[in-house]
Picture: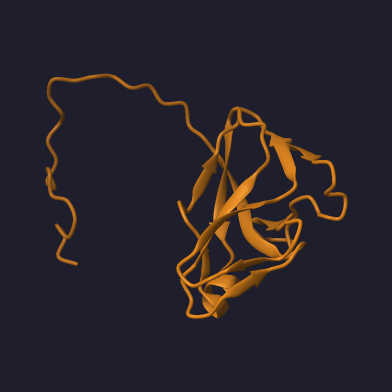
Length: 147
């Protein structure tokens, strides 16, 4: 089990710290900490504050992902998805939202706008090589498998 510390930023006492909405949920819902309602026009993107900063162990990353209901009902999703928050970041967590829908969408203070999923980060070493081991696939890229 890992401990993640959340610091509510000044003026956001009414915004809940991230929380799971069901016992087996993978993600913690994030709320919009906007001062006033924000309207996202179709095709528009905006960075939405969440009102908190956090500290997590170096073995973790936090991934910011869209909420399926907002995506399905309104076309609201996260750009750079999943977005990664590194363990050494201590600034306010913000969510980059985009409106892919046909109608303007209003983001209200306290509205659940995204979810945050924690993942363990493996320790990896990088080594430069003159040659790489052969595989059946080789250098086959996009569409290589026929789909």
